[in-house]
Image (cartoon, rainbow, N blue to C red; front, side, top):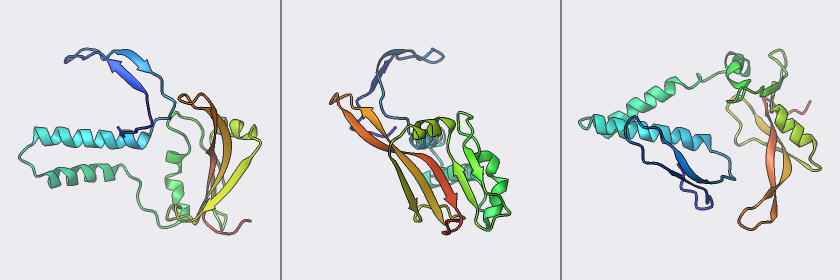
Amino acid sequence: MRNDKTCTSRATTNNPGPGEQLVLLKEKGHTNPPNFNDCAAEKVKTSLKRKASEHPEQPPAQLLCTELSKRRKDLPPNLKTVNEFDTLLDRYQRTLSDEKFLIFDSGQSEESRVLVFATRKNLEILVRREVWFLDGTFKVAPHLFTQVFLIVGNIDRKRQEAGDIEVVALPFVYALLSSKQTG
């Protein structure tokens, strides 16, 4: 995965042979969350390396193009209007751990569509925060939406190396707005 110089976690495993079970022998705990994008990228790289070793006669560019075509088939289609988003909504209503994620949809009949995403746990944590930050940004909004709006809360996190507490701001609620109008 990513070569993160700040992560001091380590894991020691046995060296299993073909058909043997991988066993975790020793572990130094993780404090940082997993990065699913890094995992997905690593899977693609591993797949490309395997195919390159299995088919050394194929040019690398051809292997890469084939892999990209395969991955594009898994992507949702490019939509033309916000209301076409309903065809994809099922895919984004739940998290990877099957928690409800889409908590509000203003619906197709609205002139300005608003989608709000959060998990129950995030809302429970947010409601206990004394300070909230609100942030709207236009630069990273998906092409069908005008604005991404975030509700951010601060949490205290113990730093293992220093043994002290640091305050970290985390986004707990995400909203996609199709208009700059507030209501």
